[in-house]
Length: 137
Image 1 (cartoon, one colour):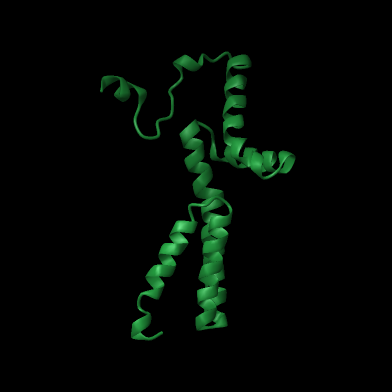
Image 2 (cartoon, rainbow, N blue to C red):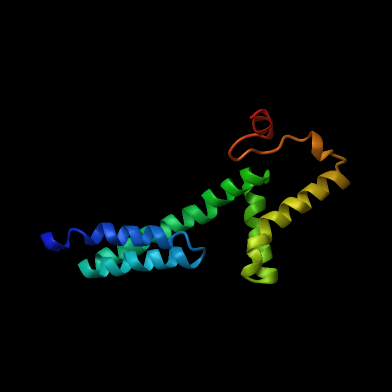
């Protein structure tokens, strides 16, 4: 890479960051871009880039996202992971979008019907601010 190519890495990283927003396809495109850029250096760099992309994807998909989604709706990360997997297997890829809301509704019904819990008395998970803070303002 010459001095005149200094603009290329920031441009490629911005493109990878932008396509990362697109569900499912975005991370694949960003990973493919990283591996393709690695091939411009050598096969060794491309393999290392592929390993890094795979590691980050697995970490995010199986550890970070279930924890974040679970805390947002009041479910355990394991339940989020199981529900997304089960809904995906049973109904197809598009139905995965509804897996966490369906799991939250099923857990609420389970709590109300079988455990006799009143949802109005339960503590609601807060993502940005609590409902009491919204009422005060």
